[in-house]
Amino acid sequence: MAVVGGAVLAGVAPGAAWGDELVTHDNQAGSYVRYDGGTDSTMQACSTGRRTQNEPSVAVDPTNPNVVVAGANDYCAEITSGVGGTWVGYYRSVNGGQDWTDSLVPGYPADQSSAGLSSPVKGVCGVAGDPTQAFDGVGTLYYGFICFNRSKPGNGGIYVARYDDHGASYAGTTLIEPGTPSVFGLFQDKINLVVDQSNGNVYVAWARYSGANVSDVILFSRSTDGGQTFSRPARIANGPGELQFTDQAVGPDGAVYVTYRSYAKQNAQANAIWIVRSTDGGRSFGAPRLVSRIDPFDSTDYGPDTCGDGPFICDSGLTYARFSSQSAVAADDDGVHVVWSARNDAGQAKIFAKSSPDGDSWSGPAEQLDPVETGHQFFPDVTSAGGKLTAIFQDSRSDSAYDPELPPGNTASGQNSGDVLQAFTATSTDGGQSWSESLESAAGSNPNWEVRGLVRSPFFGDYNYAGGVGASSHVVWTDTRDLVPGTDPRGTAKPGGVDTFDGFQECAWDPDDINAVTYSAPTIDNPCLSQGALDQNIYAASGP
Image 1 (cartoon, helix red, strand yellow):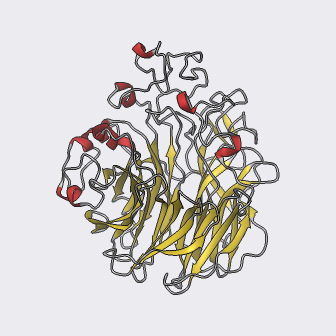
Image 2: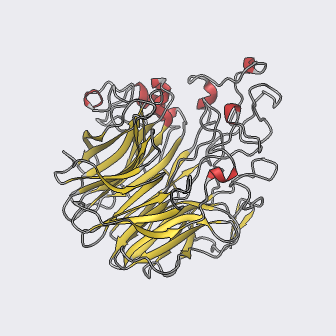
Image 3: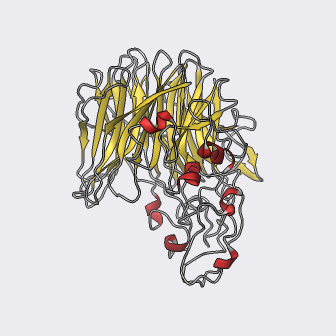
């Protein structure tokens, strides 16, 4: 067993962790650099703003494995934009992930550079997120993301940026599919991107929400000319009901696999994990195949989607960030491998795995990655490299307050149960038949800090990421070890519904607001926000 912060982590041998490197250096002047090596007010603010990053992605250059790139939702752009949202961060290492140079994809709201002004996102959308990345076989990086405006519901569009020279040189951004700016319009969400390194084909999959009829579809588009143009999006899965969280893999024979989650709502469909396969390079797809029905582990099991303070305070007294069961896929010479988070018979959230020789037949039961009986596991991703599968996930097995009836990081009375969440990997060298675990970081996190400073709600992102090439795998995860807690001077009796006793406050708001009649939040330039109160970061590890 390993001991972390005084807690015993069951089933893990001491010293089993890989490296544990900070990716987002937002507390050092000059750490953020514009795409062209220059700087501006946003880069300067990002370098020392100590803001929130989450939903990380990672990719390794097959032509030079020392080049590792990562991405994340990065909230530092809001310091200069005033938009109150996130942009997509771009972080690059040339020594295997030990040191990083941080940046943002061009086009952020205050970007006046030539690349920023010429980007198709400029003037169209002010908030970008859901990063996803992959290299082709000659050192070109493709970076997918969504971009939207919070003031115009339903207008999320799908974009792909390209970086040449092993990810060093920004080459432009391409619009794949726009949303529509209306309440009952279309919102493109949860993009995932992979590249067939044998021929350079770029594949993009995502979920499209239709606000009017609540019948979602999974869309797919491909580029065969190095990301210059993309095919008209094709439906590869239809509702009825909600479909979400696409993930993709390319097999050794060029077959493309897309997995996704369906939600049981209004008895329209099952809570389940599905997969669709293309054997002709993404030109066409077969019918969706059921991988497994699931008992989902969703934050809505405990009440509203998110519970925090102010307008997000919940009757239960619990404080928690959004989370949801989701799936991920890898393909290699041993077959196709899908992992996901769901509840077992005891109500505990575990990571499950299932493999298929061809991605078409999915008989047999799913297997849990470990037998540990405490803690919730969630946000899995998986990659295959060097004959080994590597899955990344987060786990609250060190939480002494763990109960299936509680979200991770909460006590029964709705208090902060401490830094009880750790990043784990599990590896398999026999095609997913058996797994062994490693603790990636002895530092703990709690996902429930109210890091959305303007609305006082928690957010921990929606996923982690794994990538590999050759014999090396890299994983990235969201982490709150650097966050500086504090207190809120307002009491629970105030009309704003502020809970000062749950232990999830980051720092004191303006004392003049103590007697506010209605709920209010600090302005974007309040110094409280740059004192580490929102300092959620991205960490990475790598191993053979």
